[in-house]
Length: 406
Length: 80
Image 1 (cartoon, rainbow over the protein chains, first blue to last red):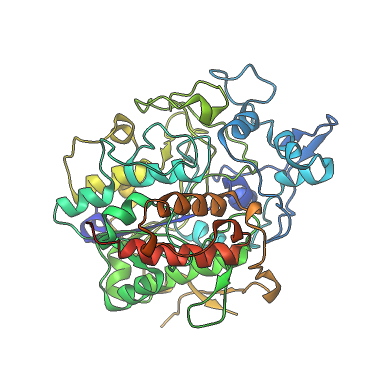
Image 2 (image 1 turned 135 degrees about the horizontal axis):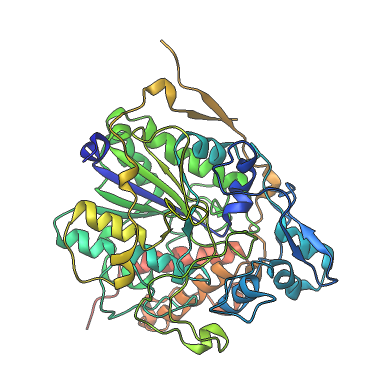
């Protein structure tokens, strides 16, 4: 066991919304060729059959309106356009065509190929440069939010490939229930009651004791009271604050302002970073639920089937047995025990490459805090875990960045 | 003693705040509201929010409805 793992007492997972790896981190390939981002030559055909190139012209807001379709049928088109479909390797050629379907505007549809230029995202890009960035972390399902988030909580979506949330009376327990039963501590922090939680009505009904709000997270960091494992949800809507003022959505879901999400990520990082005891004993995983219909160039690989079959209503008649992953998402693991500029290879490296997905979250937490635990899906049991990235060396304080707000 | 590198984080412009953005523009929020509506139907009348579902048209409307529902879900009605 590494010294980093030996010192680990807390794992914090922050799951943002609807951005692909290439859209957020693809620019970093230019400065570090190990990061499997964009070369600048990637294209998708538009509906006039002209190539739409990736361009570093992504804006914080006002560009991806309407919300790009990311339900299963649309993602199927984004992945398999120009191919006979599964089991063919995804072509990743249908993103522009799919976005065109929503507004029938050729010029607008090409914006789905835009990505953020280097340092346009100072928080995410700084964290990627300073800690561990995953080249091969994929969403669990080629579909929307709720089923993907379910994999982070349960290691499965119980056969759902849609936004259906009613996972009641299901055979596998959430990671929170498992931890509580094992005598461990856990919390799910949502932003505030007006934003509430995407996870999930049955948790609100059955497990209100695990829920707390974001201000409580900040207080728990300050006082050193974080539980063993916690999951943080951003603010999902623009709304007035309880005590007045204006609260911006921080989830980065199009068309919410990406900069507010940057502020949110930095605030969480700082909250952990500013408590020395917490900093040396906490790993923070920042990830995104799915790609939100936005371009990524890496074909999602096959995976071990989940043991469920999707309803054909969810997939528009396409058979789906949860045997292949969704589009790649930005994921960064932060800890002072991680070597600077760690890049975890993905499918681009046939020898050392590792494939992660959201089932890796309960798999890792179960392994670290519970140990042997059989009552979970084969998919979760097979998922890669990520705490082996913690090393024997704790980096000095002056080597780890700190964020300040304008 | 060397200090850690400081990275400046810009804040979004005030015009980013758009609580009147139509709910139909965000499928996630739209579905969150839909799910809470489905739950509310099972509440006894005295525990319901009193918000007419058809009046929830914007993010601000959705946020207020979700707020009331969340508080109620944390204090579920007593079982008969």
